[in-house]
Image (cartoon, rainbow, N blue to C red; front, side, top):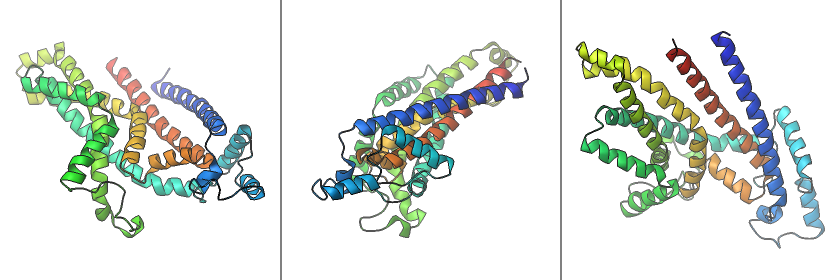
Length: 327
């Protein structure tokens, strides 16, 4: 079987797995919302259960499609999806696609920035720790990284807010714009300070696995026979890093990062909630709390595609790495 055919088979299997997982996720979310004690009508009026009652409540329930069964909601969502429409949000009274587009821009900037920063810094630190594993500084940083790996991201975010936003007042506490100012009226440079603390928090939750994995991989390659052979022939440490370590450790670090797209997404949801950051993660939480089925299903679908892209890329890179190492 050719390499291209192997890639195609792997991609088809991954795509089929995505479709099955997506169907199960949509069914589970719809069932949970149907059984949830949350009253979408009350949430629609900001928790005021007495704002509407009687025939008016029944009419509004029918207009919002809240009297439909779980199966009917899923069928309507799939039909809308096939027609290129994700439906209409009950809570925001806007098309779901518009809400996702508006909110995902901020989340993508946050996640891409944190992912790239954690990959570059994590790989660089892991490379240095792997080159000098017996030094006291290396041992200290490794222990610190292990502690970072178990710290919850919301706690890190709260500590950063307490120190840099409240005490030192270097950065805003949260949001994406000052109170009373519409984000659309601000330039990106004016919004940039609002990204700093959420980005640092997300980096903290992503960087530790890359550091630890890269360190172990560098130590493994550095102790291999071909590296010992290169040292015996007078190659410098810089030359060994360039021709042996980088090519054998950089791709695995990238695979780890791509395979962690689900952790990146879940971390973004928590961090956006902590910082009141108006991204797709905070919108996902609000749609669940308000019982907004169309918006929740639409965001779930887009998040599943995002995670699929990361997993598929990691799978293909890992497959290519194993094939290249076999030659």
